[in-house]
Amino acid sequence: MMDIKNLIIIVSYDDFCKQFLEELLNKHGYKTIFFASERHIPDTLYRTIPELVIIAVKETAASVCRAIRLLPDISRVPIIVLCESNDSSDRSAAFSAGCSDYVISPFDEVEILNRIEIHLENKRSHQWLRDKITEQTKGLTEAQMETIIAMAELAESRDSLTMLHLNRIRRYSKILAQKLSEDEQFHREITPEFSDVIYHASALHDIGKIGVKDGILNKYGKLTAEEFEIIASHTIKGSMALESVIERHPNSQFIRMSVEIVRFHHEKWNGSGYPLGIAGEMIPLSARIMALSDIYDAVRSKRSYKEAKTHEEAVEEITKMSGTHLDPRIVDAFVEIQEEFINIYEQIS
Image (cartoon, rainbow, N blue to C red; front, side):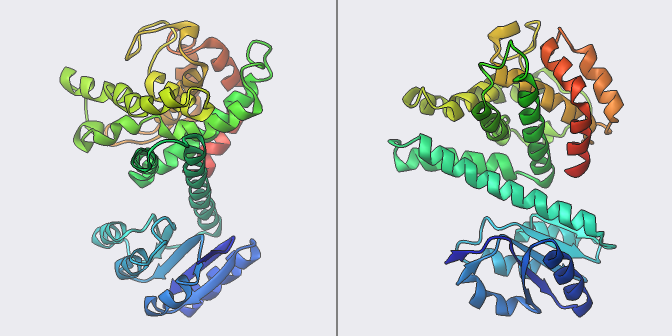
């Protein structure tokens, strides 16, 4: 089995759609293989692994998704469905069968290219996580290793909104770290490796929420005290799951930073956060950076219990948190590069 860089398989019964996609993708450097039916796919996929699959259909795509997901070594290949049907049952069936994204016509070239790049970047980052965990946890038992990798996978793929959120906060965190590295107070701690590692480690920040019921996570309205305690416990549960790794590998920057972010990204500069109520520079720098990234994206994003707000509203909320919730120096860095935050949010939404 061989991976071919930039190879995208297209499955479509429509010749016009085939021509549209092949011309668009070839023009932007992607190699394409076309199939009119999923019945012909296995002969090719057993010899090569594409980086992504696009299914373009008029109605249900579930059978094609299911056929692809049943093939060996294809479980991590993103599948984007382009469909004329806006029927909710068709969408649900496609996601249940294993599709990663679902786009409804009319199809916009820029949107299709952006969605492809988002999924390919997520796939590359996912592989980086697997490779880094494997590299830096040599000596662990095979069972322990697979458990950690599985947690990373769950954190990355719980749902499509989470995947977009993770892709954005990775970029926010990295550009914040790079900006802060220009400051004399931070330039020794924030090395180029620090910026690269925070990009990936930030993906694990909410692994402790994997065991929290969706009914609590997405509740409309105020949480009860008991529900808040359940959600708040995700910082401890998630970090404890990684503690055995950092104990065995105390010099691993990736593992150490992952634990810091998971445990402390809800602490506040003034000491009023959780789980420990620590303040100021006692909060690890990686967690302080992550806190701002998470807040910005939460304010900008629509959820079942709130509407999305504008960039200007997010900036206003964040600047009000300077010195109370957030490290003032990180807020200042954010204000200086806020245009980059706008660009990231608009590109990955």
